[in-house]
Image (cartoon, rainbow, N blue to C red):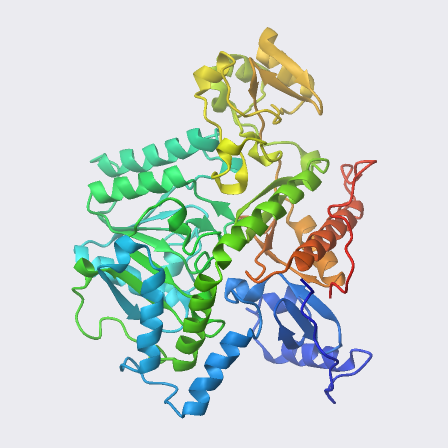
Length: 575
């Protein structure tokens, strides 16, 4: 497939030397709020776009892996979206109707319900909200509080649900009263020091124990809100088994489960909705971004049993956006009919595999992870050393020795090192094997695929001494204990991530940053990305990573002497 081409520009406002661009950027800096974000890291002035290609006022072209923060499932100005919008405009239909019924709205609702998990679609209600995901989150929280008569909320560390008061309170880093924060499974920086299935099980057990503890201090929860893949939190997929446990825990306690699919929905993760991977049917789904075909639209879909709020309990002037509903209907139908979620799974798996191979010789890339076309690379500063976490190898019989030597460690899955060549693990998020053995099994050497990660302490020799006779030294100053591969993740490297983003931009690639420390390179290409564009994205990203590493000024900035290119060059204009 050829990369989407844009014909030559003919805009009188464009200057060959970029003067128009700089003038626009200067006026933006003078007149717009200090709260602007993307414009600071991406100093470009888009004037035209088609598919994945964006053209700036200076004539430069870029491959867009931001996609409007995931809102453009079909890329920019897809023909089916433009046709749907023109049909509404040409019909002279009203463009804004509050919550009145219209044929456009009816068609959108039909198409939306056709894509929902069957267990929810059969008995669902939909609330059209103000045209932003954060307003839909507010509506969902209001809905469950009215329905349950309770006020508390269960949310997760690292979450992002929006910028309005209620949505922000449920996001990671907030300190709102009434919100109980639970640990989200995060293999690379597992809060329990384990990662994999063990870490996910401890996360679920923590939630269950806290809810059942009469002295736990948890306000009676009106609902639990979670993201099937944490996006802004660093592209962290929730394990399917863990999601099913959250469904069991909430259902057993009559706590409505809210799935925030604002960014993960409409095929992004390799299934139409990210909850489809696990088979979980939530009580409430919060939907926005791609459901509007690139135009503002947000809805809450929920079980009819929750529909007891009174008229006007939630409203919004622009909840009747007819152009967005038409564009959304066209987008939902196109993704469904052309099986783009399945293609996202295939292309995403290929990208993950090649990025992991590329990362294997570069310690600055701590982990490559994702699901479908929602991909993240967490960048780290390996030369600064790990953060010591002693308790993680207690059951492996080494806690005492580790404590004596002042060295701490944790059991870590090998998913962060590279893909596991085992078809049995194909369904696991990221395509790599999770940690399956208990710590005691690991101490006996009964470890399922978990090679390749090291026990790293303040000093290599200290780690070896702490682990006693059962330890063996590994390359890079690490060790393993009785067959257990252990490590502590190095600190995040936000400055390196920012440098990579700028190197990408110089090479004509737009990427986003995210994660707890803004050290995760995020890729959100449109579902229509071609094979040639996929190669171009990987090549440009690889070049940008190597350039940023070389100029980072760190002693680990050297590249592998025989580092192979990420992807072979292919013919054609990749712009």
